[in-house]
Length: 188
Image (cartoon, rainbow, N blue to C red; front, side):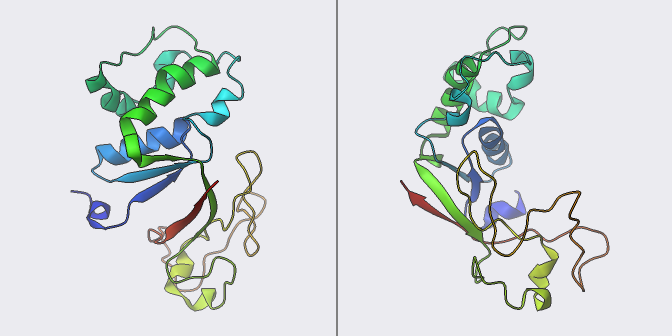
C-alpha cells in the first residue's frame, strides 16, 4: 500500500478536466483516495467552451490508460482510436463518463480560493526561511478563475525567468519533501 494512502486526508485535485480526471484515476489506481474540485457544473467545463473545435490528436492519444481501466467495468468502450474527436465529443463521450465513475469524489461548483500548508497562514509568510518546510516550493494562495493565472501576494509564480533558490538547510539533491496541507474551497 502506498504510504500516502494511510493518511486520513484525501488528495485534492483541482479541476475535472482531462488532466485532473486522469490524475484522479491514477491516484485511485495507486490506492489513494482523491477529491476533485471543479468550478464548473460538469466535467470538462473548460473543454466545453470550445466544443465545436476538433482535437489535433485521435482518440488513441486522448484517453488515459488508468481512466480507461476505471471506465471498463461500466461497459464503456473507447471510440474508434483513429478518429479525431471534437472538444464536445471528448467531454461527452469520455470526460463526463469518467467523472460519473468517480461519483461523489467529484464536487461541482467548488471554487478554490486558496491552498496552504497546515498551520500556516495563506497570506502571511513570517518565519518561512527558518521553517524546515521552506524546502518545499510555496503553493499558490488564490485562484481567480480557470482562465486567469493564480495570484499570490507573497510568491510570484516560478519560471525559467525567475528561478527560486533553495533555502538554507534544504537537501542538496533537489528532492523536496511532499508538502502537507489542506485546500480551502467554497461552493458558489
